[in-house]
Amino acid sequence: MTLRLGLLGLALTLFSGCVTSRGALCPAEGGLPWREVRSSHFRVRTNLEEKAAVQTAVELEEFRRALLLAWGPGFDPPGTVDVILLSNPRDLEEFTDGRYAGFVGQTGDGPRMVMTGGGGYLLPDAPGDKETQAHELAHYLSAFALPRQSRWVAEGLASYLQTVTIKPSTRDVVLGQASRPLLQYVRTHGWLTLDELWQWDGQTQQSTAELQRHYASSWLWVHYLINEYGDRFSAFQNRLARGEEPRSAFAAAFQGETGFQAALANYVQLGRYAISTQPLPPVPTQTQTRALASADVHVIRANLFTSAPGDVPPAERQRKADLELDQALKEDPTHVETQRLRVEKLDKAERLKLTRLLVEKHPEDGLAWDLLANALEAEGEKGEPQEQARLRTAQLLPDSPAAQNDLAWYYARTEQPQKGLAPALRAVRLMPGNAAILNTQAALFFQVGRCREAVSMARRALDMLHERTSDQARQQFKKLVTVFETQCTPAPSESSAKSG
Image 1 (cartoon, rainbow, N blue to C red):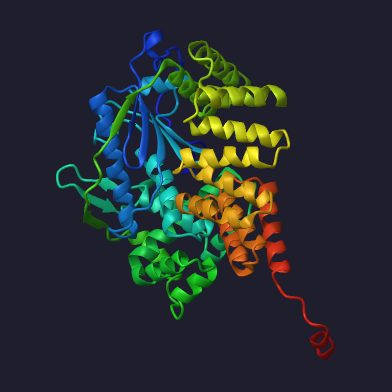
Image 2 (cartoon, rainbow, N blue to C red; image 1 turned 180 degrees about the horizontal axis):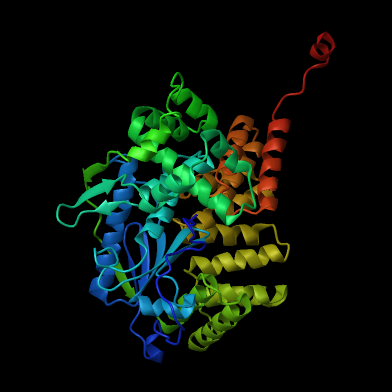
């Protein structure tokens, strides 16, 4: 979550005034050429010139590598992060009312980072809210290291890591610098106790003031415990890494330590702490670049209109997005990403006809096969045609957590759990912080009678429900845990019931 000290939204307020420009255009409309640069862990779509685009992809790899040092120099999980990088801050004004320098959204495969820059986003003089990007990227990466996290730990660690810095002169990574706004907040408004923070997981519909207090308190406790009780906090994280229940893991790691809560006030007032300075390990520098077609650019613009923060009414956002999609289809009537955003408006028969055409025209495009699988599911098809479409999607998109999870969930719905275990496991490995993916794995474990693992995975899923989860969804996940716990507990025998 990126709400920090009054920033209710997804990025730093940077500009003011009316928005009149249209900067991030496709070349056919007079805009700069667009390209996609893929590195080992990032997909960057940008209208920066090629040298700067490649440089930025490498810098993002360095940024990621710097954050991963929080869990050791050898920690390097899989996964690809989607990035939309606009050539300068003015390009973003059209989508955000001119009020934001960048923001982070979510896709089925992980975070989507939207940034602005010129010549390389992470250079010292680059514009944009780098802390927002670091915070959200830390959330994504921490799920690989800590498969179970309470909400205060998740938010506290992300806030602790958001101040990461790479020194340009020495290439050293600096971790653990205090966040001045958060420190000032707790000095002015106080902080919550750990007991109060442990209760955060069950709380919903909080006011902005309540959320601010929880985020600031979480940062403070993590920063304090890392600095003053580093060995015990490391032991706590090691237990979370093994999948232990968070509160029990904390109690075990801090067993016998009685004075740490009382000493916090002195820590806040003195403000003395250590920072970690480590050399930046080598990062992969190989990249692949391809030009983007005009239709690709219109889809990017449509996504920006519908996902960017700001005060533009949803209906107006959708109107502008629809204009972009209309133009994309004029450029390419079978453009898969465009049709993916429009297909839900069709009736079932039209949708099935269209998706069959897309697969015919683009037989090697996993997104086309995914659309066909969903159309078949909407038609009520549960047999081989849908299975083959889901299998083909997963084969063409081997690094997509969503594609692997959809295949696994198909097997869960059709009660073929043995077939679903492998893609479910791959989805979890690719995105262990996604509650829906964990829930699929739990359901399959339950179906094959692996009750203990089903309960454990369902609890992990519940742990990973944080800020963007509705009350209804949270209750459904809680209910699922209860069902698994109840049905996985053997009923007492008749004789033992009588003797009791």
